[in-house]
Length: 417
Figure 1: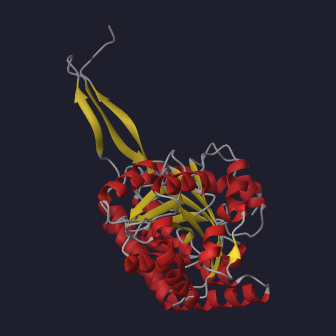
Figure 2: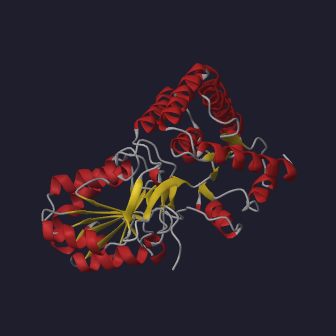
Figure 3: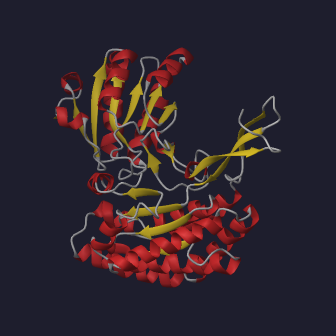
């Protein structure tokens, strides 16, 4: 795909976005339903094509974590369909009156929610992003340009073409969903220059990809670089609950951005709790790295270096630090954390509220697994990713986060005096 073709594609998306902005909620929901039905009809072909790409990725020496993200099986496919249908049931994010008043002269002033316009999604390995992104964008009245990784190109095109067919059959504009169909960096490089047509970019992938996108474009970027997630076990934590939450936060899915990477254990409960935690993590084949105090209580574990506190492992490795109270835990998290997801285990409401108020992260969880930070468990239906930015979106990026607002004023010949 040459530069002029990428620009043409972006122009088409811009025109589609202008049409989408005035579509009804009923039409967009119908499109999402037909997109899911169309996907279901090509399921055997998608699974077969994806299996071939997985074989190729293994042959090329890709990591097991990457292979897992790339793979679509029956369960993953059904999950993808369910996300499209769930986002259709999400309340309409458009045309909501966010504020308004009538001034003393009778001028009616209000602001209402509207789509961002054209959203570009650049992502690696995860074909489910293809369906999630299209679903969230259509629900919020945005045109979307998809650019997946070359390792899943054939799978992504099949998914996109099925959804395009479903959306058009429902009556949406022809170019509401588009996908870049060529591998390589040339098309992406051109995409980054098209700030005249694209309103926002959302990269999904490793830190290197996100950094290249953010530093290589004038288009606003919704991003997160790292998911260095913490769980602080306070002195009064229920031991059984604390162990279950730590294990689930780390082990339920180790290669995702809201998996636990650093466990902080209060000094007052460390001697009792750490051996129990070690046994539980050993059963799940997790390598532990600890501070000096942790090593004294758990002889034989590896030392945690300064780099460990800065690391998102996305692997069966966990760093552990003993802290002297909640204040030290908060200082550690705010210094080393990435602003993604951090949690506390405590029976004290005051301690929980202090933690929630002082931790500067997109998601703060009280007595809950870090793995719950995301669109599904937050009731968003489907999301396009997680943002650790503070502008424009923070946390899970769902349909509401892909809107902005406009001011609308109704007068009856009002003049400025």
